[in-house]
Amino acid sequence: MSGLAPPGYAPSTGTEPSPRDRRRTRRLLVASVVWAVLLAALTWYSVRTDPPTVREQRSLSDAGPVVDRAIGELAGAIGGDSVLALTPPEVERGCRVTPLSDGGILLRGVTVVVPAGEERTLLERVSGRLPADWRAGVRVTAEGPRLRADAGEFVTVEGEVEREGRVRFTADTGCRPLGDPYVEPAIGAGSGPDVDALVAALRAVGHPDQPVGDHDRAACPDGGVARTVRADPVPAPPALGAALAPLSGGVPVVDNPEVYAYRTGPVSVIADQTDGEVRLSATLPCTP
Image (tube, rainbow, N blue to C red; front, side, top):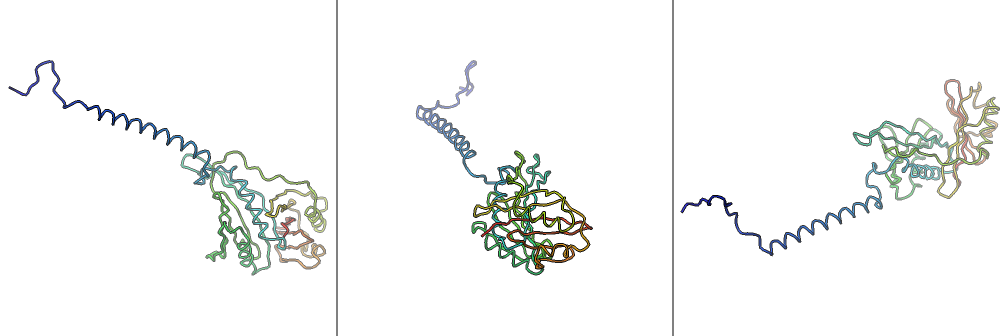
């Protein structure tokens, strides 16, 4: 006989699955469904409870408090015996978080004025005072000594010599999703020894009616507050050092054609002179 099947009959494809095979298939199907449900539940829980594992998981506004705390730690590590000024927050927009989404970078800073030659000493002193888990260190590069530390949650802290006699410390977020707008910590009442020192300096340089302008603050590690107040630039007097010498007791920390810096009580005052104008700031630092 030929192997052809009679008309109207399908050729045989082999034996039917046994009951045991059918049970095994059902068990595998149930196990796959259970595993998929479990994996979805774990993913849901992880998204809501686990800390971020990459910078792109925290927005700029989420990272703001970390930057603010870092500036407070820096102000505390710099110490009350230095001449310093907090600098205004900067939000730089336009960086790329991913190829398809824009972001921004939040940066805050602290400027310290020191006698020429003491820049590296300051960097190393601050490095030694920062929290141990920041793993702070100072290394010498082609551009000079640099401090680098990790403040946590992908916030980087750096310190570098801006120019002779001036060191700048920064805390920045790197490029993040913008999220809600960053809100700077609230400023206290517009009075205090820092305001008094700034008003006195404005009077000394011949501008007693110039209003006190911007304020910046940071929470110190000991629970206090560091605060900087500034005035808009005013025309410089013929001799900046001579005008401010009575306020410094004749013992400035720095006195050169570009900068006159001094301490009056707990407050540090910096006068920057450029292109015939002087910018004045006064800072109440963290206290030991």
